[in-house]
Amino acid sequence: MRPEDLPEIRHLHLFRDMSEANFSALMASSYAQLFPPSLDLIRQGDPADFLHIVLEGTVELYAAWNGRECTMAVVRPVSTFILAACIRDAPYLMSARTLERTRIILVPAADLRGMFRKDAEFSVAVVDELAACYREMVRSSKSLKLRNSRERVASYLLRQSQLAGNVAGYTLPVEKRLLASFLGMTPENLSRTLRTLEADGVKVDGSRVIITDREKLTRLACPDRLIDGIEPLAEHSGSSIPSAG
Image 1: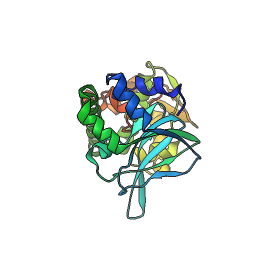
Image 2 (image 1 turned 30 degrees about the vertical axis):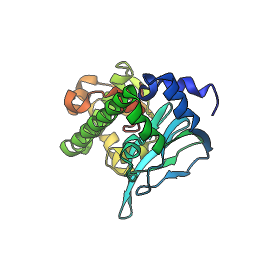
Image 3 (image 1 turned 120 degrees about the vertical axis):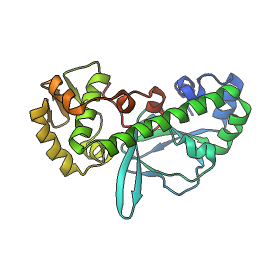
Image 4 (image 1 turned 45 degrees about the vertical axis):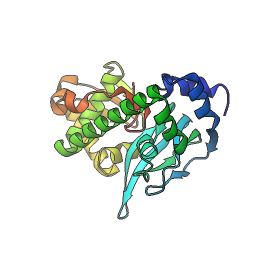
């Protein structure tokens, strides 16, 4: 591990308040590894051996069943995954693969659990982060179950604009195929839905999004703070799609 990596890791909420001695001990047993694109890092069902900290590159978390796959989250620097499985000493519920050349710090799960019992501030941070991830998953589940496909896409596009400072135009932070999977759609359905949304105040050209009528888009998306609210800690813990802001 490079010495210059430590401040970035230390700045994460998960490690920020733990004692310096305990942080150093945890990092001493961790190591960095560079992975090529399109490489499977973990498989759902395997034992959770390491907490992963993404320092460079992009990782897709996905689930598979009966020949189908769906994107659960996309992780970018500097973020961690999958904390819950490591703390619970349980099998991974998701798989992970690199989307580009990616550098990751691997923290042994056994050491992580030992530190959870030893460092009170670290324990509090773990609970905070897991609670934020749970709440983000509930929000996502509510959106999938309560909104139709047009409402889900409109809500996502409007939220990205809001996160970027209510801008009228921005670039999608992920490929459309990943966005479609995250929103519970096929790429073809997403493309059709995007075309229909031009009448509702938003135009998408390639990866560029232009909001032409915010009032119309807002009426369709019908934002709700109990669905669309922000869980800041979840952004750095592999439980959401990256934002444009």
